[in-house]
Image 1 (tube, rainbow, N blue to C red):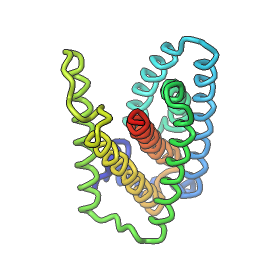
Image 2: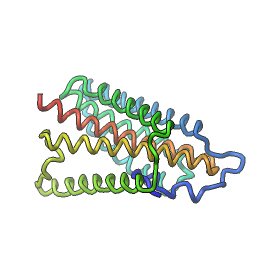
Image 3: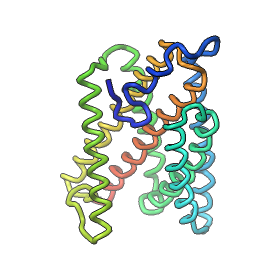
Image 4: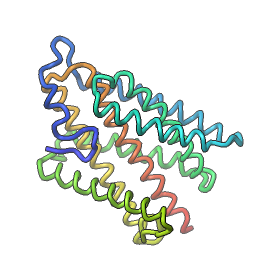
Length: 244
């Protein structure tokens, strides 16, 4: 079994089964940690947002945010016991980046940010309800399909970035053409489906008695997907608005 989210692979919790002793991972505990990380991202993003609209150069915020996210993500993935410390730090640095990017989009398309935030949480809540109702069955083939699609998106973005360094533009990915918009819609759908996989793996982690600190790790993995979904929705809305 495999998740498209690299921080919540199919065997993420297997090695920690039954290691919780008297302090085990729970669904409610993971939800609480996720809420804490979300508040930290919002607070940090709000700081960068107001800095941007106050005329402050936010390039340093973006650079620091990206570097911090990369370092802390790697540390969290490879040293899960550190998640109670690194996950909140990750959320703060992620907020610096997200706030800056959101400000740049908002300055070009007024109102786009609140729309993206609303859609992101609507999708999160909607998918959680559908998942809990059992309407979506997280089968082995479902996991493989979402993971393969997610890997394909990552490789496409990586290729676009590398070619961009040499002045070569990959067609459609960044275009506001009908095909470009359809590609963004597809990416948003794949990002949303990764949330379903995250719900499934967190639920299984709690079921097999993982240690308490894995709540922070599960929350971290969920936030990685949620931020990705939000950024992809921003890109999609920007493409749509640029055609008006």
